[in-house]
Amino acid sequence: MINPIKAKHLKKAGASCNEVERFARVFPKGARVTKANCLKVTREGFDLDWFSKHFLTAPAREVYDKAEAPAWEAYGKAEAQASEAYEKATAQALWEAICLEEAENVKSSRQ
Image (cartoon, rainbow, N blue to C red):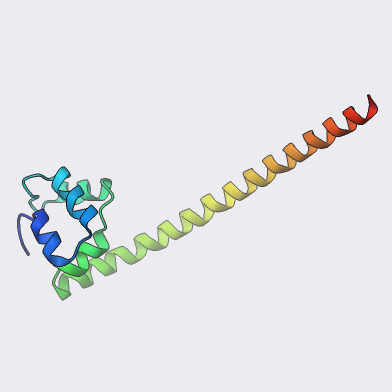
């Protein structure tokens, strides 16, 4: 693997212009491949899956994919729970707003 990774390496591998420019801003001198920098690119929102497809060897990619699968499964479950909570909360809020509007309409019609 190339170490350090520089913006020119991403460009050569076909990364989008936005990703290349953003990488150059975050890592102006390039980035050594370290655990800390792996965490940093995660926090910065870089596309790790794209990187793994373009820079990892097949055996390393297999290790990555095996670790990624349960993480995606957990993410999907958490997202489903959050979506359900959001839907319940917004349905309740809509119902309360409709009830308030109906009460206001009844009040106005009596005056």
